Length: 158
Image 1 (spheres, helix red, strand yellow):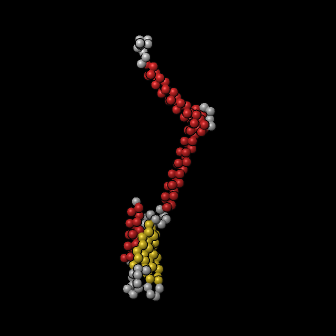
Image 2: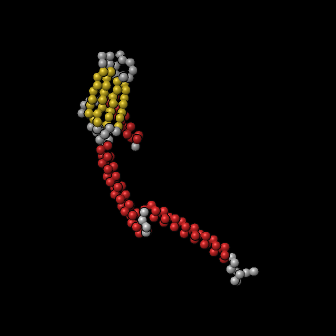
Image 3: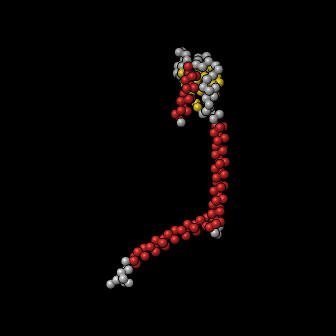
């Protein structure tokens, strides 16, 4: 038999609807309680004010960190960033590749190239300045190769 003109099908729909509303109310209430508890404030306006204050503070901290990062990047470009090493044997009477050319360059291809020549009588070390990948002194084949190795190492990193 139909209740009130066939409205018995509405009871399950209303029951589901009330359940859904109860669940949503619980979720909103739970979030509000957690938000209120974390901030230590009693009303929503105070909570939102605290959140806005924190957002401004964090924004200022991020801006400060970005400025510091720019300064560090500018300082870092002057430090040794690229290294190239070439070992070789300049004299036929010595064994092994005990001589070497070592290029130490910064981000602007400025730095030095060290040349160590090992022979029977001793080892000699020469240092030549490098500016923008070139030197005012005559560079040997191995020194040029060390500079190129240093430049390649940077390109492979990027």
